Amino acid sequence: MSEMKDAGVLLRLIYQAMVKAGVDVGTLMQKLGINEDLLRSTELRTPHEAQVMFWKLLESQIGDPDVGLTLGQYLPVYKGQVLEYLFLSSPNFGEGLKRVLNYQRLISDAADSALVINEHECYMRVNTASPNVQQIRHFNECFALGLLAFFKSITDGQFKPLRFDFQHSAPDSESKVREVMGCDVAFDCQENRLYFDRSMLDIPSLHAEPELLTLHEQLASEQVARLEREDVVGQVTRIVAELLERGNVTLEAVAERLGIKTRSLRTRLTEANTSFNQILADFRFRLSRRLLAGTDESIDEIVYLTGFSEPSTFYRAFKRWSGMTPVEYRKSKQNKE
Image 1 (cartoon, rainbow, N blue to C red):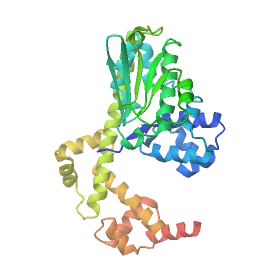
Image 2 (cartoon, rainbow, N blue to C red):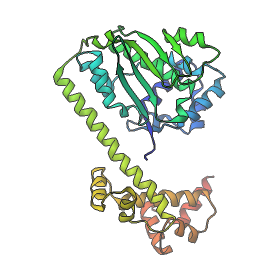
Image 3 (cartoon, one colour):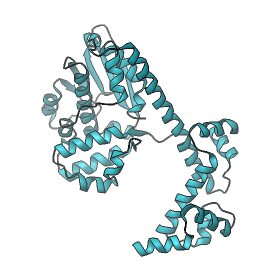
Image 4 (tube, rainbow, N blue to C red):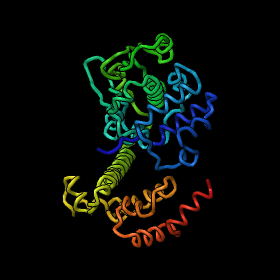
């Protein structure tokens, strides 16, 4: 299974919220190993499981037991993304929501949301596929506030929630949560759910445009397809790492592990603008750099660990990759330290 990741826009929104709230973002980003250049990357997707570390570090740094609720009130409204365009170009809120749920992976690989319509009220399941993240109160409450702000924005303030169910346990500040959310809340529930009156589905979009809707759906489909192609690269890289330890790294072996034909795997990697040999070379280069710079392993041992049959082959490959011999690279890193 591929590692689940969140879209970079989620990190950028929470970053802006932290700045507005006066959080020392420099210290926090340093602990997380994130810099501003990474934040600006349009291709950024962060590990979903990192939410656990992020919220733990944040609460510890600022000492706010309601940090998710606090930052949720500073979150900028989610704008300028294809999911917003899908909503706005749809004829009404309900149609927009149904379409957006088809492309929820653009927000997160872990997104597990669905719309359930009953006679008078309906609800949107707002879950994550990660059991570890499901119980993080700060994440749940911050995301809930961001979702409500977004729904109110695209309906020009007409959207009104009835109740929000949370999976996490009730905090001491339960009344504060209810006040900030602007609706009834419940805790220790089976799922995270946003309840609202069925009439909300019929709220018309002032920006509905059939031709634009078609274009926006096409764009969303293309973005999801790109993520699926990247999945293949990630899967192949992980299998390469496992097989390298056993010395049997071939395209055929990887295809067998994936349960697909060798020709199919080669085609899918071509569609992802790469190849098996490129992925193998990139992995060997990263591994060799890490071993040379961060360990005292001998060159002979590194040759073995990176899957090369002869030291001379490793030397030539490393010189081609980096412009330096392995010994020169190790010395340059030692001198910097």
